[in-house]
Length: 230
Image 1 (cartoon, helix red, strand yellow):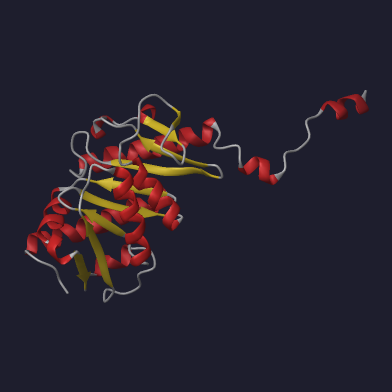
Image 2 (tube, helix red, strand yellow; image 1 turned 135 degrees about the vertical axis):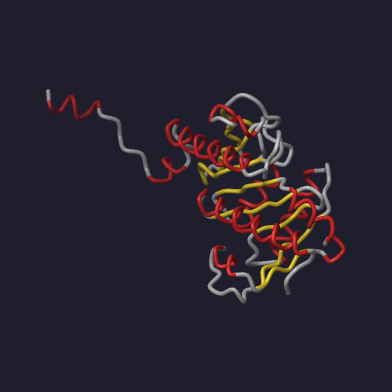
């Protein structure tokens, strides 16, 4: 009896097979709940009013699977049910709806930096600065204590560069420019799309959330002061 029971037990999966199965329903649900909570919090702070903004988190590396907000959803009412799972080509593999057209930008950041989460806001301050500083190619931020909230930054004397990219409706072309910008500016923590908003990221959702909070604070300070502190 004992031998028959042992023979009927499934063989353990190899580590490679386990890594390629994608996220479990529980893993995905937990990530979706976190994304929804972060999105509602950003809405409350005025950073993603209406249906603006999109958020994502990696739930599997091999194969690449990303949890991402569905397009057209009021972020003040964002719920776990509004989070989709997409593959590396932005195709939906779990959930109802479709991701933002900007999903390809999320994939470019995840692939280019190995980021674990990507958050995109549409605040007043990022919109203003990305327009007024577009001719300079970016915004330089230096001398602020809050810079130390960015991963790897240890001093207020750090000089953070936020590149500004021209916006486009051609997401394949724009995602290629994003990938190039990331290669040409190693160590940056975010970039702006002109008169559109901020993209930032982190190894985890909490790190990415912190980067949004730090950069939104600094952009508001700079915009209110009428320039940049360099």
